[in-house]
Structures are given as C-alpha cells and as structure tokens.
Amino acid sequence: MAVVVALGAFLMTLFGGWVAQRVTDRRHLVLGLAGGLMLGVVGLDLLPEAMEAAGNKVFGVPEALLLFVGGFLLAHVVERLLAVRRAGHGVGAGERVPQVGLTAAAAMVGHSLMDGIALGAAFQVGGGMGATVALAVITHDFADGFNTYTITSLYGNARRKALGMLVADALAPLVGAASTLLFTLPEELLGSYLGFFGGALLYLAAAEILPEAHHDHPARSTLLCTVAGVGFIWLVVGLSGG
Image 1: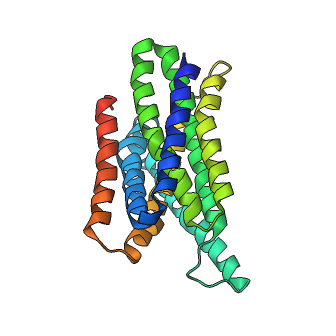
Image 2: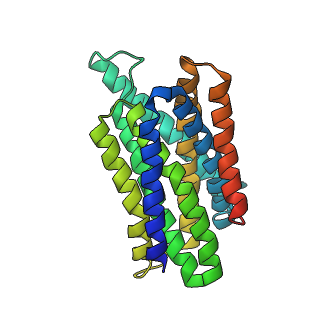
C-alpha cells in the first residue's frame, strides 16, 4: 500500500517542478514562493518532527537542534569554500556556483527518500497512521518538486540537470517506501537526519533564495508569495494532524 501511495508523491513532485518551469517569466515570484515553502517546511514540519524523534539532550541541548545548527553551518562553509575556489579560477564573486545548487538538490532527493521510508514505516504501524503520513507526504512533495527545480536552476545549472534532479526527487519516495519491505530505520536516526537537513535548507532559504527574490524586484507581491508559501505548509501540517 505504501508504494502505491508513493506514486501519488511521485506525480505531485513532478507537478511542482512543472509549475516552477512554467512561471520563469515571474522569477522573483517563484523565488519568493520557494523561500516561503522552504521556511515553512523547516520550521513547521522538519524541525518539530526532528525534535520529537531525536530530543535527547547532548550537554544541555537537544540532539536535533545541535544537528540543525550543524547543517546550517555546513551549508554555509560548503558554499563559501566553493565560492572561493571558483573565484580562484577567475569567476566573479557575484556569480552562482552550480555545485551548490546540485548539492542542495541532492539533499532534497535525500529528504524525499526519507519521506518514502517514513511513509512505509507509518503503514507498518497501521492504516490510520499511514493515511495521515500519506497526506503530509503527497501534499508537501509539491513543494519539494518546486524547490528542487528552482534551486538547481537558480545556481546556473542547465535545464537538463534541473530536470534530472527533479526526476530523481520524484522517484525517491518510491524507492524509500519500497525499502521498508526490507528494513526499518531507527526513529532517532531519522530525527537526527531531519534536524541536519532542516538547518541546511534554512540556510539556503534565508541566505540565498529570499535575498535573490527581492534583489531586482523588491515588490509586495514577492513578499506575499513568501507568506503564502509558509501558509501553505502550515495548512498541510494542520490537515495532516501534525
């Protein structure tokens, strides 16, 4: 059953990527919405789940929060190192580093894989739990597809690479759900991953996506798209009983 439901996540991810492609003439609105979706996913979905699954304290701080900060810092360090390396080859400081976009998209694929695993594990617990998780996964995979294509393209990668990462992101929940027929992921490990990934995603949203959205078009419509993105994730979390 989990694999069948994951097909819905597959289609929703592709739809999100398709929407991101079709509105490229309103790039600032796309980026504003993507930033809001990413902020909402991190603050309202990933971090609460991570805290619940990996809330044990390490020297007074919950493990999930430590990894959240670690993910944020690692994303910052990786981007700076790649930018310095690029500058050493004569590339301007204001130009994007394609590897950062691919790395971020790969992290989105990893997150979608975990979505599939969580979906399979939920159906192992029971049909009610599976249905709840299925609603959350299918609806927020629209945001995953939208963000995967947007992030890959934003950093100067060719459309072919952006589509490739989108397809990989769409397939990931299917692979994850199927894998639960073979093993079960420990809850604490899943929570740790969610915390770490959330930190990296927040860095990209706050330091890259949103500033870029407002750089050339500091319009109210862009800000409204960001707020709408957060509101959409809040609606998803509320409907899923999160």
